[in-house]
Image (cartoon, rainbow over all chains, first blue to last red; front, side, top):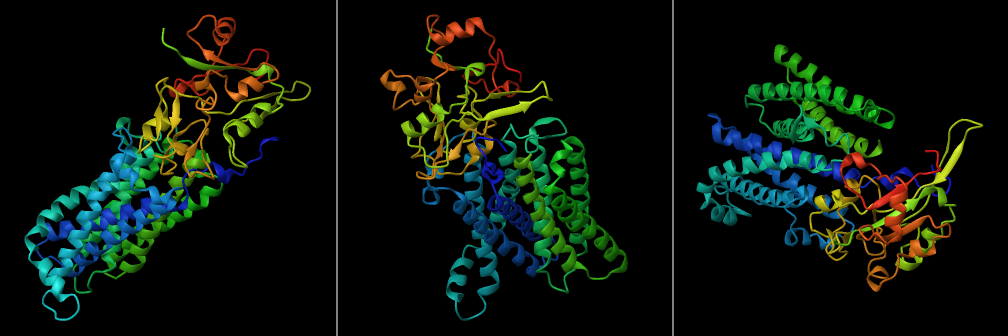
Length: 299
Length: 187
């Protein structure tokens, strides 16, 4: 602390918990959408419950995340200016449009999926469901285009931080590829993993989720490799002090190692450990965003 | 040659009186607890009996390659006609992307306007009226000089001709307009 200008460290943090939570929600939203849409498009069995869960999580999570983002602005009522004043060099300005399109697609997709299962039932909302059902042919095109924007949104959260080139943790490039930020890849894998886990929580007991569990296991292994690379690339200071517990307990133990051990165990023993595994993966994803956002600014 | 505004800071001449800090706050009505510029003590450096101390100057470095301008989503942070980095408070939504991007930690959110705020060379209030920035005109020790670096008759050009100046974090390629001269100072 300076002898003339003592300032608490907190004041130096431009971005805090709300931003970390938003990055997490954008990731989980993209992952859930991709899980639902790819199941819808390519799965022969087409588990309706699973598609529904993913299709509902996606719009809710991203809209919640955007709400937090607007609340985090120091001039929240001026958020609309982001849509009218555009800077093509600014990752955030480009991202505003990517996310806006994704919100629209996720919302429409959720509505179409909802109408599909609600149009037959009578009662409240059935009129709306019948009306929406007229556009049922749009479901697959929306799923395809939405998948593209879901990937973009999840990846964008990494580009957003990486554009801050003066930040040594955030701007690490992916194996020396200058135009590919490490965080974009890490957040994509983590977002897909958390989104898939959240969607699986809504699956029916009768659904055969073996394939999904295997994909999640692969994603967890990928994330472990990515984090190991990051750990050996950047200054060890980022993993020290108050950040050490968050990283080693939250991100590594709860978010990666325990779910990995449990899911391998359940694959062999055929026991159902879906809820603890998915829950831990989601918590780990949240811890990762907090860790990256805070550690990058603290050191 | 076109005008190239720059500020030269001769660190050895600064006595730490903070007249610049106060003048800036009055001139620009900067809210309580916030500063566009300040001159904090650096040090003590070294081991007794070889210890030293000096005063630094914290302010926007007026980069010609400004990271804040690159990241700003609404172009609220921009270069004006003289190439100086300015903030259009009306366009600013307060996302703090520029605060995170600035490697000099020179920006803050103005408590009263909610917009990103920073050092401006007193452009609107003084420079555009032919006056020197408030911090320069109030500087007691003659540590601060401001002017057109391309004009050989200007104070800044004369000082830069005599002493070797450096930029802060020059390795980032930001090309600042604030020249630091550390002659006579143990860093």
